[in-house]
Image 1 (tube, rainbow, N blue to C red):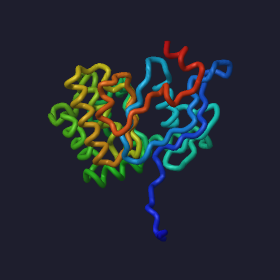
Image 2: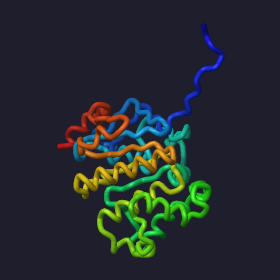
Image 3: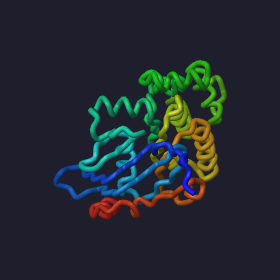
Image 4: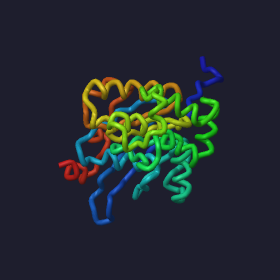
Length: 247
């Protein structure tokens, strides 16, 4: 029997087709990926050797870079057809980025760093207001959820924080305003195993609360069992130049 109502699945957060990328036109491709889909709410562990193109792929997914060929759809919007300003707007509204070196603004306080995305994106600001009542209240909640509840820390310059504390500030900044996609580039590389596992647990909890998809890049295979799906970059990247880049 055929039913009239088929189950409706929302479009994937990321839908990539036929991607080709090289740093210069004369170079071999660093990335050649036929397809990659990231459904809403899924937590993906992306593993690869150093220099294999993991960070480059994250930058492409977030619209920081543009592929030489192919399409990258973010929430159904083709990033490859947007202007630089259009990609910046999509990233500000829909992507939280946790950088390997955190990229916190050194002359701003903890609170000022966390609320920064809401100054660039009215959409993120509105979501933060809906979740927390005020942007500062939502920032405080996120910091508390990430074990940064001490009120004395909120006005402290980020340069006076430990590496672990800076990492959690970077995560709170990425998560505020419930972006649909969170990308994390080796954010646990400076942590010992116990602190690493605790951080990933906290990140999962907040991504689940917001319904955010997570693409987490690392070469640390011990983290893989914690995720919904593991992708080996070497399995999806068919570029001849990838092996050379990874050596």
